[in-house]
Amino acid sequence: MRLTVCTMSGAGHPLALFICGCYAVALGVHTGVCCVAAGRDTGYYVAAVYEHQLILSPNPRALTSRKQALELMNKNLNIYEQQVMTAAQKGVQIIVFPEDGIHGFNFTRTSIYPYLDFMPSPQLVRWNPCLEPRRFNDTEVLQRLSCMAMKGGMFLVANLGTKEPCLSSDPRCPRDGRYQFNTNVVFSNNGTLVDRYRKYNLYFEAAFDTPYQVDYITFDTPFAGKFGIFTCFDILFFHPAVSLLRDTGVKHIVYPAAWMNQLPLLTAIQIQRAFAIAFGVNFLAANIHHPALGMTGSGIHSPLKSVWHHDMKHFTGHLIIAQVAKNPQGLVGTENTTDKMDPSHSEFLKILAGDPYCERDSQEVHCNGTTRWNVNAPPTFHSEMMYDNFTLVPVWGREGSLSVCANGLCCYLRYQRPTLSKELYALGVFDGLHTVHGTYYVQVCALVKCGGRGFDTCGQEITEATGLFDFHLWGNFSTPYIFPLFLTSGMTLETPDQLGWENNHYFLRKSRLSSGLVTAALYGRLYERDFENQGQGSGYRADGPELA
Image (cartoon, rainbow, N blue to C red; front, side, top):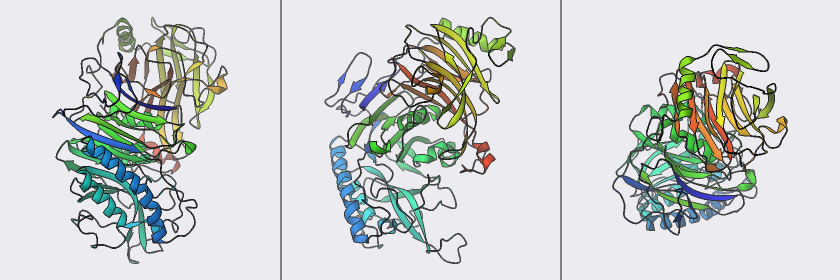
């Protein structure tokens, strides 16, 4: 599947048109290559992200020389430079490249060493590598990136491997006498090294060290104010992704990633957009393009609209360019709600206001109220989704009210369907510690299309659907950190009509889907419970910001 689209929700908001060989249709969806309209609005800046089809080492575990490593990296850097020059012609002011895009992945600690640049601390040293190439040894990659930023006249964000020597007197110093970090670097439009971020939440990356302290990195720009930065797997943890936003001046995030998609809940574009909506920020995400490994999905996301690229069929890189609001408008509240008090929403509010007492048995939820829950529904069932044991109930009929509970979390769904399809949908709940490919505690309410007609297919990875729903989805979450994951047929991102808290329940509301529903989920993170199994942690502290 290959898809690059620009979407916008809320007719009352002006859409910065991304037109260059694109065309607009009535629903405000654009297909093809998204570029920037002529005439720059002073309320916007121009950003680019590049999804890179990287050139990999044929044997990353084999030892090689610095010269051979540079030959490989320069092939990727040549592609980067071409994209910078293309972006410069479109007036781009900041460009983001993906994680691992220069050197690749699957190295050992020893085999990656020739690919590492020396990294001086930008807090201690002011340096323009392009103008001072001989100041430090082993900085050829930094020099090329600096010159690209200068030549293109734009801020540039890229990811590379770096090395920092350490002394034997340092109790944390590795035996080989150096730290090796997965590092993002930021260059200004004159090529100066502005700052660097060393990845904190490594994803099984044996070649790199975890920094002893978290880097909380923000940088200022003359065109849009303050940006924050983190990398890939960091997005699922409190530090630095959430704690970075304690700085209320951060309105924009740059995000290099090498993300392997996993449906139905954690594809790259899903979590990118969810973060933008949850925190009310602009999110500039560049992912690696490697379909064989499930890697694709980049975008420029705001709370109200997104430009994204997802392509599992073609083996080519892709440049996305868009105008981005300097002050993003949040979704939560009335900003994105045109008919807030329609009958279905009024009924929803009455249900929550009444908070009817419910008794649960193995088959149904019995409530002392007007709403009848799980009427004519079969018993709940269990199925594996995202390697977790979800409790689910099938979604049948043209309309209904369903509830399903696990541990302390209860999820509720009220729905109407304009037309019925033969597909099986289910409402699922999970409240527990996720322990596969990382350890972290989640609370999830999810309405998903199943892979087939059997209950055991619920949770399978699917991308196409025809089922349409008008619905409210909500749950009694015990965390303020909730990410709305919303995907329709053909890997299309949808925008909720409304999100928010009502009577200690968090809800998502949507009507008039543009295509069949694949996933609508509320994905809650309980960072303080990540250590219950002594797993890979977030270093949670409770003094961070809450989601809007």
